[in-house]
Length: 259
Image (cartoon, rainbow, N blue to C red; front, top):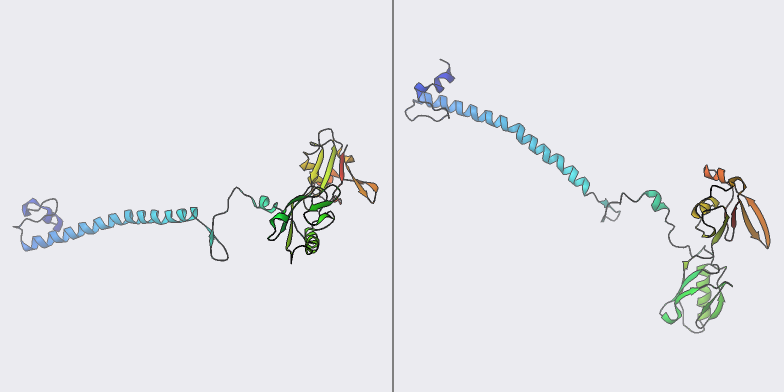
């Protein structure tokens, strides 16, 4: 009889659950012990794949959780919030930022914030009049149109030295109303368009609602007055739509005519 048959034989008093009868001989006890060890090893081998699968599931879930909480690390070592996926790089690039105080030329109807350090009564929002002048306390009427914010702040500071010791003046352009072009004819919205840095005729037309279905795109032109003389500058609308350079740039006061 094979060894396993002898161990499991009822004549040896062996229970099916592997327990040993106290009356069993020493040789029988040894055989039962061997089979119990064999059964235990089998159970361990059966449980290993289950445990490995559970561990793999835990490891796989960790990168997913980590990816959801990914943060950007700034050069200084600080962490910042993840970038908003709704904000495209193109939209971010369209932000012009603060007005360049060394390049922008103040014009009539612009709105200025003039601040004199430690002198709140001399500070405030000052509009540029149609004649290009502004009115300030102590100083009176002074020209502002045609000057940069930096030049104007220096001029105001020089004038205030008669009344204040070492005045510190800051000029900020709050509203750009002088830098405008005008749309007339077959466009969505006739009237003035506030210029942005580098604005093209096509961009101005689009800002005004585009051309209508009755527009003659081949005859669009720009009216410009220079030194009292008016000139007519053709604008190739279809060429601009193709992304080609039309060779025409806008200046404040230009009028775009769409027949």
